Image (cartoon, rainbow, N blue to C red; front, side):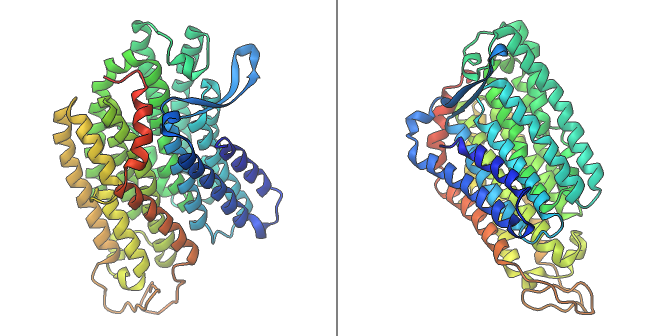
Length: 493
C-alpha cells in the first residue's frame, strides 16, 4: 500500500495541470495528506520484524533486456524517510496556502519534488533509484527560478549545477556496480563481493556524488544560497527532504554496496563532517539575514548525520537516520517562520531591522513557534533534536572520541547563533516611533495594517511542532524500526 504514496503524488501533480485554479491548493493538500496517511498506516500496521530487511512490495519488469525492474521495497530506514516526507509535504502546502501567482504550476512542481523523494526512498532497483534521484532536480530548479526571491536565478542555477555535478559521479558509480555485478537489484548487490581494489576507488566516487546533495563541506555552498533564493515551500522541501536524499543514498547505496571501501575512507568522512559542523555553525553566527542563519544551520546539522554514518556503529547510524527525520521537521519549521510568518509582514529578514520591531508582541504565535523550533534545533531534551544528537554522539564515542569533543564546540556555536537569531527576531527592543498592535506589524512610523497569522500557517506549524515533540518524548517509536534495519546492513564495524 505504501507504494501508492508515489502514484497518488504523481497523479495529484498531473491533475493540477487540468483542474481550474480554484481547486489547486485543495488538490495539493489532499494529495499530500493521502501520502502522509499511507505512511502512518504502514508505521502502525507493518510488524517491526518485517522492517528489519529491505522487503519487496512491488516488482515488475521495466527494461528486461538490461535487467531493469520497477522494484520497490521497504524497511525501517525507508519508512522513517517516507514519514518525514509526508509531514514536510503537508506542512509545505499549508504554508503555501496564500500563493496567488501561477498557483497550479507552483503546486505541480512542488508535488513532483515530493513524488520523486518518495520514489528514492522506496526504490530497490539501482537504475530506478537513480531515475527518481535525478527527477527531483528539474522541479527544484523551476520552484526556485520562477517563484523564488533573492538572486533566484543564481540560486536555482547553482543548486542545479551542483546537483548535476554530483549526479555525474553517481551515474559512474551505478555503471561500475552494474557492469561488475551484472545486476541492478539493491538486495542482490548488497550481497555481491566487490573486490577491495575496486571498492577503494568506486566508493569515494559514488559517495561523493551523493554527499554533494547532503551538503558535505566544502561542497555545501549551494545550500545557503539555494535556501535564501527559494520560496518558503522550496526552502522547506530542500531542508526537510531533498538534503536527506544525499545522506540516505550514501547509506543505502554507497556504504552498503562497497563496505570495505567505506571502511578505508570513513575517517575522512568523519573529518569532513566535524569540519562542516563547526565551520557552518561559526559562519551562521556571523550572518545578518535570518534565512542565511537557518541555511548554514542546516549544513551544520547535516554534519551530525554524516558523522553518525562515518562512525559505522549500529547506534551512531540509527542516530543519523533519526537526525534526518528530526532535522527535516525542525528546519522546515524554522524556514516556515522566517519565510511565511515574518517576511510577508515585515518585508525584511535582516536581524538588525527585526530587532527594532519586538515581534513577540505583534506576532505572539510566530514567536512561540520560533521558540519551540529554536529549542529543538539546539537539542533541548524533550525534542527530537536531542534524541537524535545524543544517540549519534554516544555511538560515535566508541569510534572517534576526539570527534565528539570537537563537535561539542560546534554545539556551543549552534546554541549561540540560535539564541542570537531568536532574540533579534522576536525579543529586541522596540524602536521609538514604531507602533505595534496584537497580530500586526508596523513597517514604519506611518501605520500600515498587515495580515495576522493565518489558520493554515497555524495548522502547518502545529503539525511540525507535534512531530518534533512526539519523537523527542518517545524516540523508541522510530528507533525500534530503524535499528533492526541498520543491523542488517553489512558495513557495520
